Amino acid sequence: MKFKTITTESAMSKLAAFMAYAPAEKVAYIRNRSLVVRGEDLSELSDDVILDSLAPLESRMQLYVERFEKVKCAITPGLTLDSALLAKTSEFINVAVPAGIDSVLRSLQPDEPMAAAENQALNKVIDALFTDRQYLREQLELVRSAIQKSELVCEVIRTDAKTYNKLYFPVIDQFVKGLEVPFALAFPAFMGIESCLLVHSPALRINETYTPKVAGFANEFFMYIVLHELMHLLRNATDTAYALAGKGEVSEFDVYSMANLPVGIPHNADHYTVLILNALSLLHKEGRIDLRQY
Image (cartoon, rainbow, N blue to C red; front, side, top):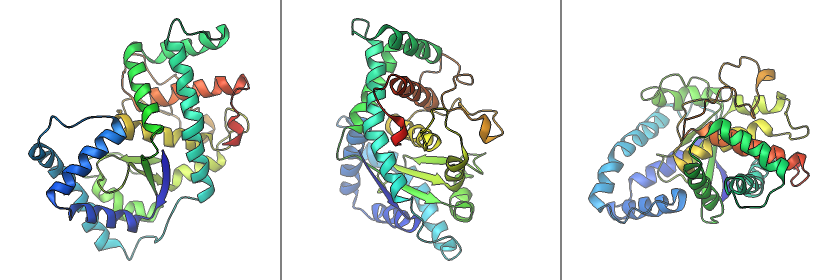
């Protein structure tokens, strides 16, 4: 999986370019994107069905483009994610996360040899978060498969308060309430932008002041945020519960905590994220990976 950072200006141009595609080009794009990102084969759907399902997405995309034209002189131009942080993110997702997923998958396989302590600790986390182990295995295998695809790209947009408040929030607020100050957002419905992820400035500020629970894991909070959003993009996971729910201070944040994640929610982004992070924490303690490099 590749990571790129693009500006808001570039993102809006990409949306406009997609909407200018001929119908056949749009259909081909959607079929390929679905297969690459989520492993879903749309061959049984007719072109007309795909175009009909695309219509509401394009309407929303058009709102962003129109809003951008109105406020482009008042937003911060040229914002991109720091290249060093982007490189760390790419390495974490491509190297550490698959290792964490593999660890969970081994624990889900009863006859797979594992160290007793590792198996016991990881199974405790799994049982605290999930009841359907077969479903969990299927979802994690799909996530791992997607990450391993070299053709899969995640384009990250960085925004600040001015840009978010003038451009993104007025459109988002028409459809989803209560997102005045999000840490980040996934835009799976943005066509033309590959696996679009928006990083808001509060996430970057918190990443600098947050004390990691794994000592030396400098970007622990940011990697939690990115992994959470990827669960939306790669598996269309929900936001039913959050590990950070009810926490008012940065010092209270614990990206490994299961306290606010009730068992029995089968397809929630933070359930997957917290499970994978706990698996990585165990691997780190055993000296099998070094989270301090991230």
